[in-house]
Amino acid sequence: MEPFLQNIVILSNILYALHVDAYSSGLVQSACVDMTPGHNVSVQTSTPPYSLTLSNYTYTPGANISVTLQNMSSGIIEGFLIQARDGSSTVPLGYFEISASDTIVQKLKCIKTGDSVSHTSDVAKSNVQVTWVAPTTHYSNIQIRATVVQNFSIIWKDVVSAKITYSGSASQQLGHRKMGKDILKTIV
Ligand SMILES: *[C@@H]1O[C@H](CO)[C@@H](O)[C@H](O)[C@H]1NC(C)=O
Ligand SMILES: *[C@@H]1O[C@H](CO)[C@@H](O)[C@H](O)[C@H]1NC(C)=O
Ligand SMILES: *[C@@H]1O[C@H](CO)[C@@H](O)[C@H](O)[C@H]1NC(C)=O
Ligand SMILES: *[C@@H]1O[C@H](CO)[C@@H](O)[C@H](O)[C@H]1NC(C)=O
Ligand SMILES: *[C@@H]1O[C@H](CO)[C@@H](O)[C@H](O)[C@H]1NC(C)=O
Image 1 (tube, rainbow, N blue to C red):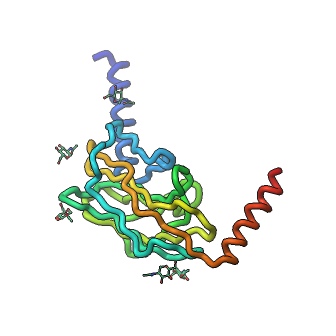
Image 2: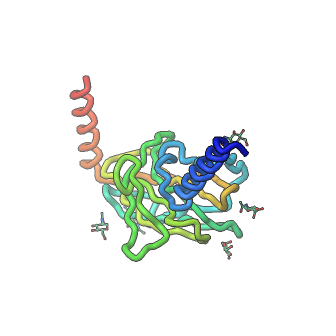
Image 3: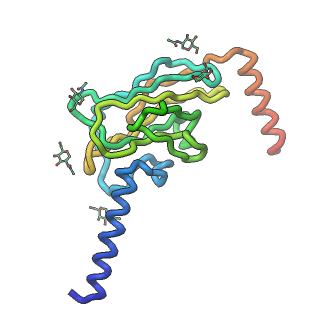
């Protein structure tokens, strides 16, 4: 092979290795918005063999809700990205807390530190548990969402929890509405 071509091959191998490494290390900020890893494999269209269950499906401002991502069949979890979103919005809501002893999960910063969590390595796991701290204001359509990488070529997007409903006090809701109006005033 021409030395020039050889160099290109070596360089592209290095770039590929770095790219893959970014995914296996879970540092997947490039997937913040579309929640799709850059593996360049098509996502599965069948029902995901994973569930997202919560300790509570109602939230008060700043409530701590335990979130469990689990395999429903033999599907193991190599990688994941978890966020809370309101309807079709791509803005992650609230933030996650992970215990100091947790070696499986790490916080990511998409917009704010800890608004997303991902794997620390591609070691196979059957479940992942984190605490989600709810926002302080009222959203109507919050769901926890995950993308799960079963292995490098098998990926499920749209693993979603049931809806989480706001149950803050009337005064807090009022406060939020008032805040909304004030923001509107500032913008207008
Ligand atoms: C992604 O995969 C498709 C189909 O296998 C291929 O045509 C395309 O070149 C790939 N893109 C990248 C950026 O690797
Ligand atoms: C769920 O959250 C509500 C407030 O939204 C609270 O009253 C209730 O005690 C919580 N339930 C559990 C099991 O934590
Ligand atoms: C959530 O948990 C943290 C840490 O345990 C605690 O400090 C905080 O008061 C809890 N928040 C609510 C709303 O219960
Ligand atoms: C999850 O995957 C593990 C490892 O393959 C398996 O042992 C376990 O039975 C699975 N869990 C469920 C609920 O199927
Ligand atoms: C992914 O898992 C499937 C099903 O278990 C297997 O057929 C395939 O070879 C695996 N691919 C990789 C890249 O490990």
